[in-house]
Length: 111
Image (cartoon, rainbow, N blue to C red):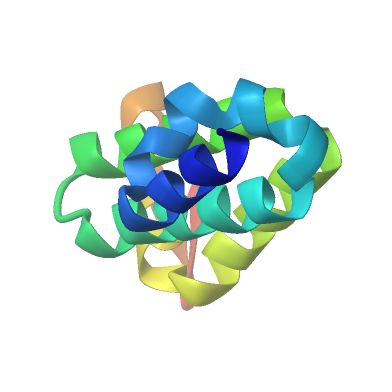
C-alpha cells in the first residue's frame, strides 16, 4: 500500500503535502526528494509576489516535515538559483519598512 502511495506522489507531486506522514518512516529519502522537486516547481512557475510567498510557505511546511537544517539548505539553494527574486524580496522588505534610501556614491543606504 505504501509503495502505491509513493508511486502516486511521484506522478502527482503536490500530493506529498498530504501523504508525507504515511511515507516518512519507510521512504524518508524519497519524501525529501519529491518535496524538494515540488518546491522547485512552485518557484519556477512563480510570476508574482503572491506566488513567491506561497513557495516560501511550502518551504516552511518542508521545515516542519524534515527539520530546520534541511529547509535552511533548500532556502540557500533558492537564493543561489534565483538571485533576482531574492533581490526583489529584499527590496520589498525595505519598501515595506518605510525607510528612505539615500544614495552615497554608488551605494544606497537606509536612512
